[in-house]
Image 1 (tube, rainbow, N blue to C red):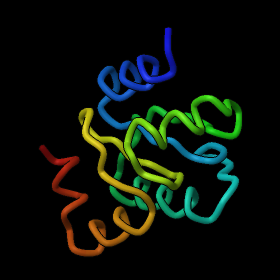
Image 2 (image 1 turned 45 degrees about the vertical axis):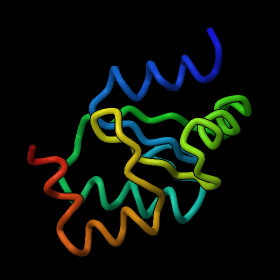
Image 3 (image 1 turned 60 degrees about the horizontal axis):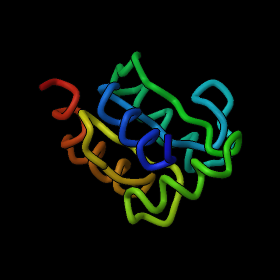
Image 4 (image 1 turned 30 degrees about the vertical axis):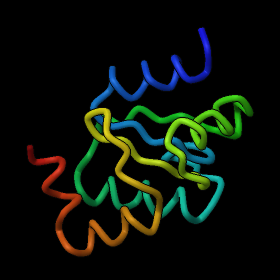
Length: 102
């Protein structure tokens, strides 16, 4: 299976997918920690986490898949939401919480 197919399967088979450095329990960068904390604050428990540090193919593949250059990347219901800055902004204005209520 190609990396693109693997990623597509991950984002379509799980309601919330976070591509990050490390895990939500042990984030390996501040931006990943920020998104993990925001998801926690939103009460999102069922996060499918993908540690990009553990798989260089996924690390590059997710950037190609989303056409977005940075990690972390959040997907909700198969749709790319954004990285740390976008997730933070959406959280602050209440948009992110609405995604999880639907």
